[in-house]
Length: 281
Image (cartoon, rainbow, N blue to C red; front, top):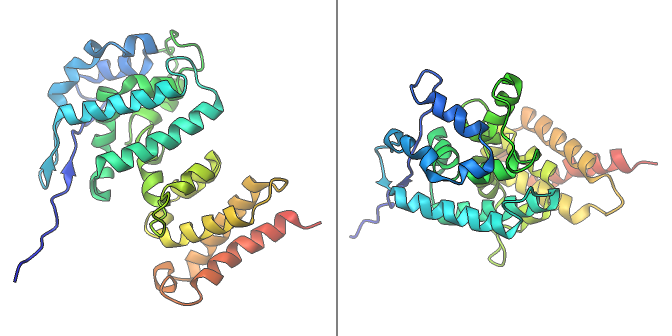
């Protein structure tokens, strides 16, 4: 009898960041530099010696990650890079980058949950795209004020995953595609992230509960996209529906009810109650 063993997970370069490291001054320089400076790869050359990999799986090469970074730059250019993007360009770029990363990286949730993977992508492989997407509202050649500690903390959430991994410039996109991919359709499995608004996606992916309960959030999202009308306050309705689902999870095991006939009706009730609350006259 032939045994089929799972393929080893792909391991990507990791960059461990700590304010106590000697390289921290360079990290601060990177996250506060203007776009025109970040486009020069020489700025981050020193970080290559700090890259490391996990030990259980197949290690990908540095060149492989550079190819991924080139793909991200290509998407950014499609949406206005290096000029400051408007909200529509940001939304479209996010959607395409999420699908691209999820399709091309083919990594496990375990590997994607490791902060070093995304730190390496943002600080070493693709810093210019982070600056363009998040920190370029002041003008493409304007640096961040290095003395403004509050500003630097807010900035760091997009570069480092230590404090809020769900807010990382690239990690958040991979997780969106992972959690909201519709595996029941072969036509366009990523249609959900193309249909949801930014805040709606944030509601789904910045709630740790739904990482382990994909069926519940997918069911709720499908109901939302089916029922919502242009004239209705969709953001308020969806936020209320998410709150109802979280309350349901406090009293019922979502994994257990996902196998029951009542699953869809219970999830849809969370949405119908939110809809009624915000459309009542």
